[in-house]
Image (cartoon, rainbow, N blue to C red; front, side, top):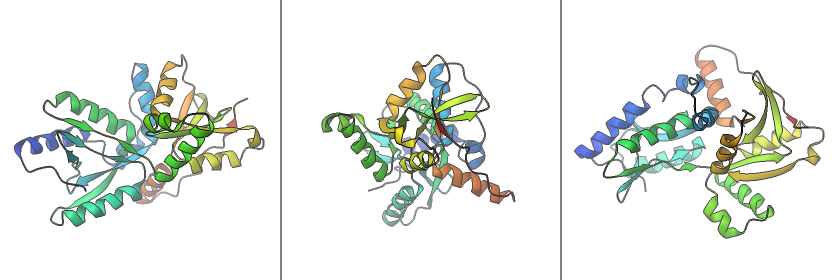
Length: 257
């Protein structure tokens, strides 16, 4: 059951630090604008997650509402807006006097700000699990089982599923060709549908942590994350708000030779 932060001085202090750290990144403008270039590989890899929006529960002022669990606070980061809205409905039912909503933000921003916040916390820790859709999680478990992993290894090692093909599907960008990873299994299937020799591609899955490790190990920037459907919906929503026409389709993809 969702619960709001206690109305204690410690709780208020934590929420104030949350909003301070997340200020300027909660709106769609922050979501759609590129972040400045950073120097170390880990930060460069994290920047690739800017096209993956997550959704968090917030109060009426946009301050995130973590869950209280023992000595830790848990702030779920939902990949699926509908799942976040379901949790919001449960929260409002349990807390009818509190005004709350669902707010999108880039995954990299949310994870970086949570990491910064944890450095300042002394008596408790803020956990920020990324919550995938149940269908993607189920699909990834099935693929990993076919890849030879046993159920114990899958259970312990899979938190946030990422999908890809062997050989990798690639996309041409202004910076060069990039191999693609997908957070959304349906998006991978759509990308494969446009490839003539798609029967030669093998679909696989891995946990996000393993994918990020692989990205960081490369001497060159050779990978990218394909934007989720939620990202494109947010872009179109912002375009309509500004009076612009709908955004174009994503660029075509092709298998890596």
